[in-house]
Length: 158
Image (cartoon, rainbow, N blue to C red; front, side):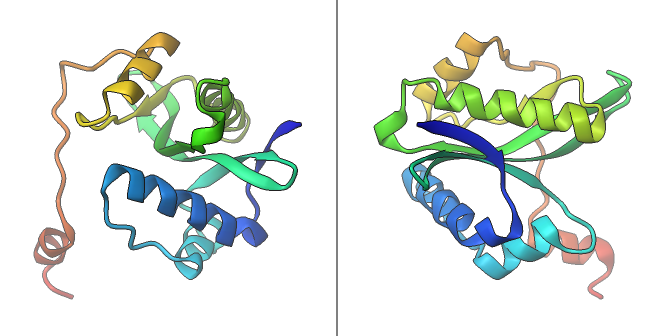
């Protein structure tokens, strides 16, 4: 039986394993580890929340998300940075269930009224999935990133 629940600190190892699988599937470097996730998700100032999808105590999906504040919308939203489902459950509604659970949690915790995410250009199936749910690309914005070296320079090389 499939169930969804909020990840707890004791789930950091399973969460990291799922996120590592996502990174591998995308061809990304996975630099997170269990200790980093514990600190980021359950430390003094949690930076994310996560939902786990499970069948018989096996993690088959996860959504990792954080608050996103928009003055345009005049509210908080949920920014989904990572969404992964095991190949065995793809096409069975698990991704949609994870997003819905993250949105419900975001509504309860931050009074979130919208959801935002990014999709890789190299993942057309993921883009189609999101579009079927009603997500639309934003033509008004360009994603801009400042890497770690750029952040060090901006902060003045502490």
